[in-house]
Length: 429
Ligand code: LLP
Image 1 (cartoon, rainbow, N blue to C red):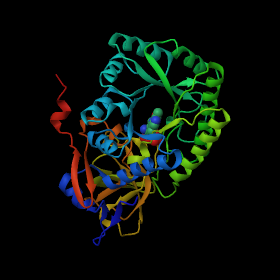
Image 2: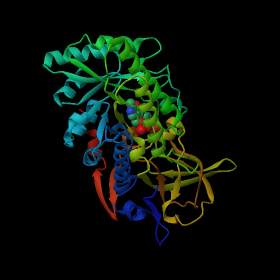
Image 3: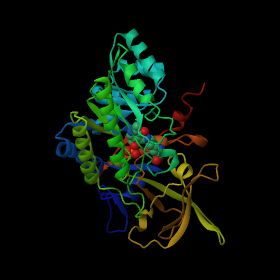
Image 4: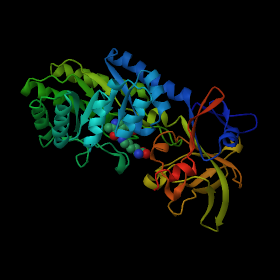
């Protein structure tokens, strides 16, 4: 990522800050985010909507990638909306002063309490996942004297080739209404019979960490065809279309992210062509990137506390964090680039397995990765940890979650405090 550099002392820097200094000042493990990178990605997304959709659309930040007040504030300032998936993410947005009409509420099992809270908070759109939810939402709206703008999450049946756990567009998915069985069409009809909901949008999301443009184009075409069918057979024009997130980012040099402009160009062409074919106005378009907004902007810093050589097998290097701050290797065998932060000018020459400190053999950050010779006391940086690291962190072994520091132009500030032991026991009776 462009925010990373190496200074005269051979130390890795992020946003103009020396990572060894950051580790010293704020302690480890430490999440560090570069504000400029985040804002630049946001700006690029916003700008692309002017170019490819004449401003007739909006990017939403998928806050599941990293939800905290500061990220909500940045998204707000950059003109993005927000995709939230829980009462907690809604609460975070409210607390950050986010314009709630630009918030879309997702999830395949929104509870009645969450729905009430979302309505009280004036969340702009409910992305309805199933008929039970539709009924529940209509009922709660009735009790509260509210009307909700809704979208339907549709399974377009597109198989994006990414990790099994993060694929969502295929037929066997817990998310959304199926197209091929007619379920989605029935739902659209049903929505017309409920007084307290107003169906304005259709939504699809085909998966995450995707590198090809084709599945996005196919999904967009399938959605437009469905909108055409709805228009032809029911006389209903659905005016908004949400095409989800999922743009892949660079974790190692083997990853080749799709240039976003190409994505926008290809997808917008498909949307316009299909709208024309069906005699529909070009819908207002939403996208929901999460990973690509914060992923490459973030790194995690650890201190090495031990080194263990298993002859002819591997060398373990133990760090002061692990699966509690980054569960992605344990969960998906995700590849990461590890840098010896104090020797960032040296060629990587040692193959090590970076292990966490949890009581669990699978607590590994990365296996057989090449770094500049590691010694106890060194600081390791794991790159591209901005997305789905803090947001999936846990207190396993009662380990406090690390702080998040935001850097910008050589200055650093805490945006999420490190958890204390008091925090750990605060709900214990
Ligand atoms: N919209 C919907 C409906 C989603 O389900 C997701 C991600 C996004 C947008 C954002 O996708 P992104 O642009 O971030 O790829 N924990 C996994 C990723 C799970 C993604 C879940 N949904 C990981 O660590 O890779």
